[in-house]
Structure formats: structure tokens, C-alpha cells
Length: 162
Ligand SMILES: Nc1ncnc2c1ncn2[C@@H]1O[C@H](COP(=O)(O)OP(=O)(O)O)[C@@H](O)[C@H]1O
Ligand SMILES: [Mg+2]
Image (cartoon, protein in one colour):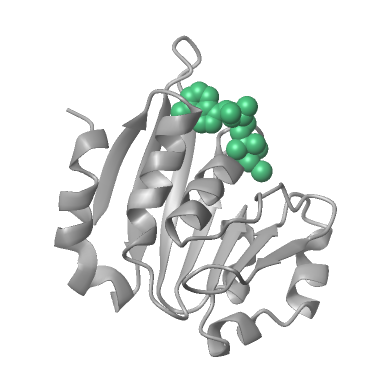
């Protein structure tokens, strides 16, 4: 099942993340894909805001993983921006994030399937070269999102592609 959304600007991307955040449960994971500048980190900023995280969310590019514990759920934000980092990321033992009841958000997460739990949300971001409008395609992988999907769809209606 897919859900296609459009975000007209960075604040719109964050608003989508914020709306999505209210559906997150302990142990959830999302894989964010899209080239550099697509808006992955921006979306994470919105998700964190929706979870009540007050700490500014910065790109984890140089730190591999950033943890935010001041929201409704712990947030683990990972950026696997180079394939050489895959092993490093695996070594982090992020299964702990799941056990910890946290939410795992992985930029370029699709390259490390083994890192993600059986069920996760796949979010693919692309930018329209002319308008810069971001398209976000949400796909549920595994059964974990099925029970929430209809409500999620309702909450994201505002950004739904016509
Ligand atoms: N919907 C949008 N429309 C236009 N620009 C956006 C949108 N969403 C995010 N951006 C901008 O795109 C740039 C790159 O975003 P970022 O989240 O760092 O991308 P990534 O993490 O995918 O590399 C930022 O300047 C951000 O403000
Ligand atoms: Mg980023």
C-alpha cells in the first residue's frame, strides 16, 4: 500500500513529519530514501517535533547516529550516506533501539535491510527539478502498519497528491 504526498516547502515537509509522528509506536522504524538534498533530514525534524523533541535535530552525517530522548519516545536518527558505513552502522547494534521502545529513523535505510525490523515504513522522497516540490511516497513494509494505515491516510489528506 502506498500513499503519495506533496510538500511545497521545507515547513510543509516538517508538517508531514509532525502529522506522521502521532502514529509512531515504540519499536517503529522508518527508512528514508532520496538523493542528497531530497529532504530526509527535514522530515526527521518534523517527526521529532511531533514527538515533542525540543533539541534541534541536525544531520547525523558525521556522527552516524544521533539520539533524542526528550520526546514522547526516544528517537534514533541514523544516516548511512556511504556504503562503506553499512558495517559501522550494523556494529552500532541498533536492535537496541527497538528493545528500548525507541523509534529508528534511517536515512538511506534501504541499503541496510538487515538493520531494519521486519515491519517498517518506507518513505521515498524526490524533488521536482522545476518546482522543487517534494514528492513523498509512503509504503508499508511488513504487517506492522496495516492497522494504522487508514487513520494515517486521513491525517495526511492535506498533502495527498490529487
Ligand atoms: N518540500 C520542500 N520544498 C523545498 N525545499 C525543501 C523541501 N523540504 C526540504 N527542503 C530543503 O531541502 C534542503 C535539503 O534538505 P535535507 O533535509 O537536508 O535533505 P537530505 O537529508 O535528504 O539530504 C534543505 O535546504 C531543506 O530546507
Ligand atoms: Mg540528511
